Length: 79
Image (cartoon, rainbow, N blue to C red; front, side):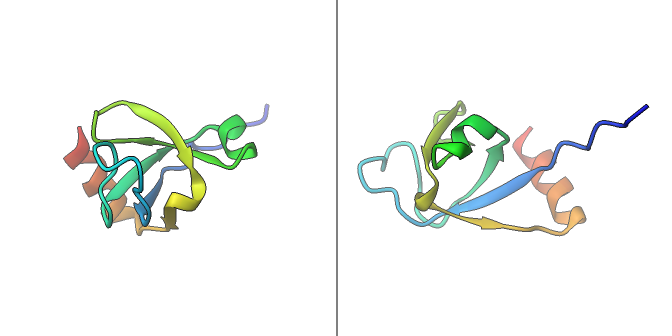
């Protein structure tokens, strides 16, 4: 039986919040919610300032790979 791949946790920094100043903060780190359909259309789904997840154009963000200990700390901080 094939094991399911572990859900990858990703983060990105907002580099463009034009027209979305209330929802996105420049330079802030956001958790990316995996959404293959959104990504196929050039969007990233992130948990924004409202506390909800929304799709934004991927070019508004710079993706980051974070070390495992930092990932755990960030997830604990956001819960």
